[in-house]
Length: 82
Length: 160
Image 1 (cartoon, each protein chain N blue to C red):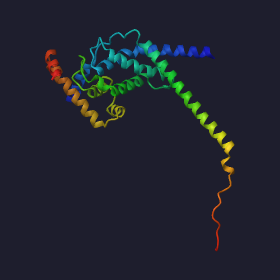
Image 2: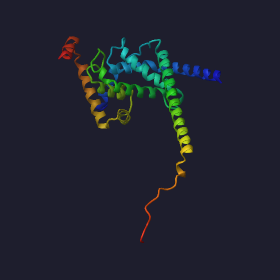
Image 3: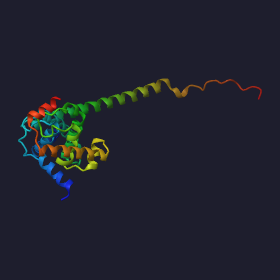
């Protein structure tokens, strides 16, 4: 066995340990936190959607009332003497 | 509709609990190595792990074939890297003599068996840096293993 491999194996052995029993409420805590995370994500998603719809609606209303495409082109100085 | 959703929710929770029962012990040991707390009493490691597991739980339906263990480990490593300054001081754990970054690399490479390239990509470090950190951490652990410092001496060192 090469020296680095032997060293690695030795450190691996140091790190291994018998698995201790888990705290009984660990999964429960994670589930509660996870549910909160999902709720928060859903809320954020909803907020972004509402904002987007509001912006689109505002743009539509403004376009229909102002009709920016119907204003005549601005008058320019007349060409003379050419 | 609502009933079906509730049933799906319950099934998901059961699956998740089975996953935690199976993989939680190993993940908690990895977290305990990272925070350098003694194995029996590791509130910091538990907090880290619960946060990472909550993330996995929230993403459970979106994992789509990805291993939940890998997902949780990545999240755990990212959380630890983000809050590493809290764990600079040893709390009496096995890897207490190492810096948080050395601990992270050592645990990912040797305890979890993650490949060098993948570790480097996960931590946003060059591969050479990961290799250097790992060999430095290994050397420190082996020299400590050869001549274990008496705890009084270690404490004196910590005070310096």
